[in-house]
Length: 121
Image 1 (cartoon, rainbow, N blue to C red):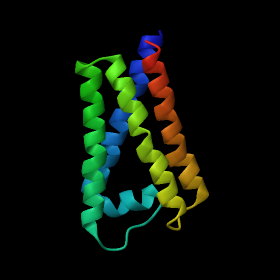
Image 2 (cartoon, rainbow, N blue to C red):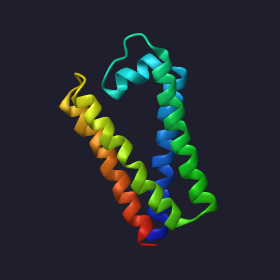
Image 3 (cartoon, rainbow, N blue to C red):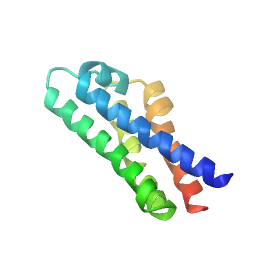
């Protein structure tokens, strides 16, 4: 049961970050608004975020498929840094506390829970 929950949560998180990345690549202005800090004009930075997030999702899925729980757990622990950083970006660039904590900080905490579950296997 724990294995199903641990792998299930990790798969969902990796699919969601892959989705976020693809959204930044294909509908960048809407994705930026959903991030919590609307973009002004420069699409290049939105593309960079799209590539970064898509890569995070693909690497996470590859680790789950080919390297197993310990590697995936370390990965989830390290990747939690990104949404913690996103929390501060939103707070310091005019975004709302609701978006910063309700989306980005909460995401970081779920990544930490996922890491803990994978470490427990």
